[in-house]
Length: 446
Image (cartoon, rainbow, N blue to C red; front, side):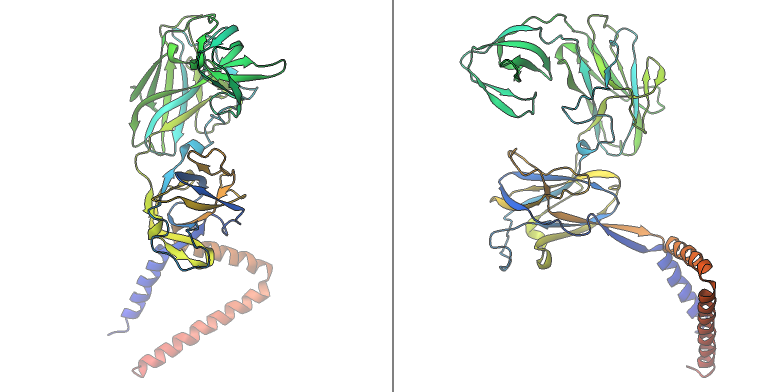
């Protein structure tokens, strides 16, 4: 009566195996080689690109005082915390490019006036969509060309490029300078015969009058891809926009935006020629998940845009002091429940110091995605990568593995038929002999 249970148990075991095979992969084959170390008192972040779902382990190289080679001290990081987050700002799949990148093949669309309507469809791999960033021009409505005067009693910094450019020098307050243009809310000034720089418009006491005024509302509406009614709206007056700049149309976040597609529409019903803005456009755009439409007609190319996100919760958070010390790697390791929805997305590792500064090793090799590490308040930080690794755990039906293995075996058998015929006969003989022995042992009560 017991023998019928054997095939049933074997069948159940086979079904379990066929549905519960787990494959583990690593972000990089081995930890990167150390180039040097630097101390931080604030926080360091490292963006990276993930090819798989199921991120479940982090390995961070970090040297508290006394490492390597000495016993692990109690609470070596003294409260240093670590987070895993999405990092959509590092995702370059959208038409927006680097901040100061204005390729020559890009162009400006005609003025957005009256019944004009500029549209773009897109899909988002991240949650908490909270705005759309575009590039605009106001046709010189910031400032004209001519002589300007800096604010008195104030030393003014000059940068090589607007906003985030390198330091060039200082000018004394009250100085007269020649203004030849503007961008991003900064004036381009002539410093010498062949030299120019940029100064924030807020540092001027007098500026040349602009050649025009833009003061009409620009409206962005967000729709579900096939929706007829807007689900979000944002209005920015053109007077608040700077020439040749990035503008963010912000709205209440859409929590469920992940893996959903939308359409944004820009209009300015009260604008007229001479009092209107325009948008940057890439006629060679290759954004596969979206389509641009100008005044109701589909066109080749894309509006230059970037979805904005207000991410609410980290994917994981913990403390370095709670990690396990992996002596062979000179690193700390943390394991946690697998995180879904990490495949084909940019993430970031973020380390915040606790009660004391920490020493962080870095490498010239950057992680997948090739983004450099960043240290808050430390612009001179190395432009290499944080030394870490991540592991991903994916459930794969073993039936798929068996099918692939069988297909590979069949292909090899066709190339070497005599060997595989002999192998098949041998395996068949072993199975038959096993069956005979099983029946014989059953008859003898074993």
